[in-house]
Length: 483
Image (cartoon, rainbow, N blue to C red; front, side, top):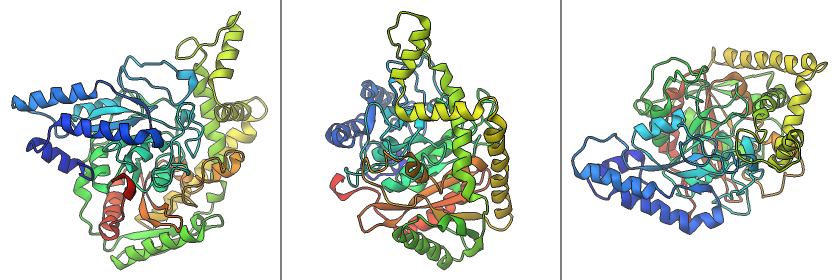
């Protein structure tokens, strides 16, 4: 069962080569065996085996079932699944069990998928290494002394270790693509508005987007085909037609123009990452693509702009956690002290740092100097992408400047940690789609990822480009020791 694509699993279940209960038990056994060391799961769904047996009974009766009926998957712990804990890996949401269903989870359920559980993440998606998580600090399956990336580190590690068929993550500044790169899997940040954010616990509302993290391009396209649907419950969901992205996977990329932005290969990118990505560019040239040198001149301002806008939105979004409505509540003698103690004890250091930064840039006297100026620079960064896509069909660049770093290596220097997302942040400010896939390995044996960036709603083209490379490269997506 390990290594099957979703399509192969679906066909095997329909032919009754194995049952959904056997498939689900297979993944539960792997979680039992390996998750003690990987620490990807915050919560494992105790009812999932019962749900799988119910699917088998329906199949035995000859009932019509959805295409993916009985296939298990898992969710990042900020995506709402009804009656299942949702903590954002934060103490302040300890014990919170949502009474409603998020749209992405509902669409997966409608397609027949079963939820294995919720996956660890940086607290409230704030981090690039999964080390700000309150409950479990996930390890990289390729080398457990290294981080899996963040904030969707638990999702990436679970897929790379074969602890789920696929997972959903969320991407605010690269939180799907960077951990996908560090763990050697495929991660897609869809166009902003492509996937409903109803049921996604917000970090920065103008940047957050749910997306699939998978072992193969085909699986990734299949999952986005399910969750990429307009939703009236989300005012930022865009009313565009749902697509079957697997139809784009022809492998024919001849004649496509791929832009190479010189600013994305600047100082800080290691020689190994640069060489590996350059080899991927040569592979596309050999497949008949036209490689075009382009410039995106405002890239150097992206990190500063992102951290002003994202922290401003976070300080607003996280104002709701006061001990009254959700999760953890500290004991205190007065209401005012209860608010103070709940937030002091409930939030971790990184979340507090960002709330303070966001409150500062929104405060009277500094709003124009920081927040408004950042929004103006965001417009310039967006225009860089608009100008680039007038010349090319897609953009290629490294996903992360390095391979996965050692746990604890960057925790004492927040700025160095923020710079690990330097090549992913600009896309979130623009709002287009971006995909990271493996393109090789460093001398340390760790995966290296290459990133493809696309214009609004051009996910199909990115999938086809990625599929063409994947068919040639045929890189392993799982460490040998976990097979």
